[in-house]
Each structure stands twice: as structure tokens, then as C-alpha cells.
Length: 152
Image (cartoon, rainbow, N blue to C red; front, side, top):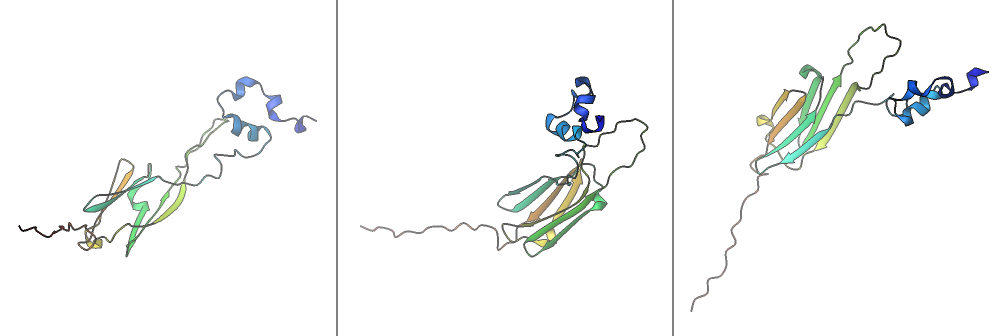
């Protein structure tokens, strides 16, 4: 008969104080945590542009640079990678994993033509930074406005 009673009622409030209410609702009925299980690794990207270059930055904490693949074809930039899960054995009864792992792939159309030969990518402190210099044809050119001179 106790199998039909949610764990919420079988365990005291002290057992649940540090858990999110929404997630604990699903746990109490033996269902997977709604927001954490099955999450995919999806890094955050920033794309900025100056007069001379486009800069793409991505937060990729805990990744090895050999697991990052960057490709540029015409004005399409593709960044792929895999954040591998660290395996460890624990003897504790309760173990929570909140970090996400897995593969990701992001493809983005660049706002202008770039010089593919001069692209530079660095990875430091979990941040990938790709600098894409604009091609000469993509750089803005200042056009001077000429007017008619008035002669009297």
C-alpha cells in the first residue's frame, strides 16, 4: 500500500529542503527530474563585429581543445565539439550530477565575407575565441560626398 503513496509523504521535510520544488515534485512520484535529466550541452556564444573583424566567443568550460572542431566554408562558420563526462566511482548513497555533457554543433552565417587564410582561434580558461578578419571587399569604405561649389 505504501508504494502508491508518493515519497513526499514517506520522507520528512528536512530531506527536501535543498531541492528545487519543481524537480522534487517529479522525484516524489518516481519520475525523472524535469529540468536536469536529459539536458543537452549547449554552450553560449557571442558574436561581435568591428570595422576590421568579426569575433566569435564561446563558453566551453571543462573541454579539451582537441575536442573542438571549427570549419569555415564561404561565409558559414561551424563549431562542433564534445564535452566528455568525467567518470568516477562514489560510495555515497546519493549522487547528483548537474553539469551537462555531450556533443554540440553550431552553424552560423557570418554577417560579411572574411579572409579565411587569416582566421585565428584560441582556447583559454574555458573560452574559445575565433577572430575572423574581414576581407578587403567586406570592409566599409568611406565615400566622400562632393557638392557643387557656388560661385558668385
